[in-house]
Amino acid sequence: MTHSDPSSGAPSRVVIHPDKQAVADAGAARLLTAIIDAQAERAEAQLALTGGSMGSTIITSLLNQPGREAVDWHRVRIWWGDERYLPAGHPDRNDTQNDDAGLTALGLDPAKVHRVAGPDSSGSVQDSADAYAADLRRYGLGAFDVVMLGVGPDAHVASLFPHHPAQRITGAIAVPVEDSPKPPPTRVSLTFEALNRTRAVWFLVAGAEKADALAAALAPGATAWDVPAAGVHGTDDSVWLVDQAAAALLRH
Ligand SMILES: O=C(O)[C@H](O)[C@@H](O)[C@H](O)[C@H](O)COP(=O)(O)O
Image (cartoon, rainbow, N blue to C red; front, side):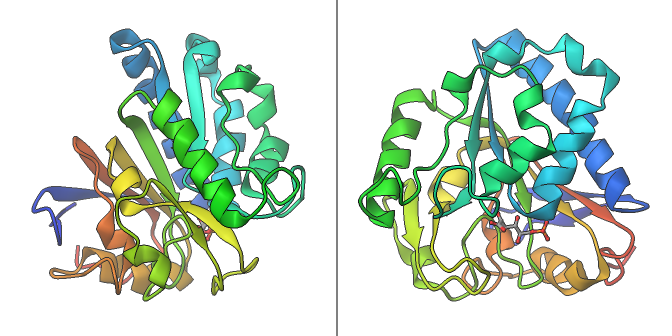
């Protein structure tokens, strides 16, 4: 299914899978191919991972993909679209949850896994965002190959929430987010400007509680201020990998 993209005019593709596990398995299989393709063209594949339950489910799927041996994991650089501002190793951090789901077992070079500093290693959430932006400028090598994004029931992506002032900060790569409506309240997020520096963006969405968000993001005229998921586009590809429950309100 293709939909005309609300702000860029490029089509977003929607691929409907039976359930959440199938969305994660399809995402993991696509990711292996995308990494192998990127490594054939460039020194490194650059990925931005997502938090939330989908972020961990896809990592576990990746670990179980037979084709994962075909990837040179030392030539993969890992970033996060957002992080919860909590100390290193905290069970509610996105990176900790991804680690526990199997990220550490993939064979990545730890020096290429770029974690957002928490309160244990930064003076403030602003300092943490600035340090992450500096890291991206230094090692980001231009553009992500793939940005993966879970989507909240309010259509937030990363930690960019509807009508939240952090969305309005321009000229920045990463921003502090305070008073997040989703706990924990303090976070660091990549901005739209940073997330949009990607060849491909994949939205990973499952569950009936996401149906409104999916329909809103694909509706003509949707704005990022109201519907943050509508504000991210890949230069080559924007794909919504969704399950049937999340797709319930789309016209087929
Ligand atoms: O810190 C976070 O929680 C996320 O990065 C957030 O943007 C998440 O991806 C969505 O809320 C979807 O989460 P689910 O996949 O759990 O629904």
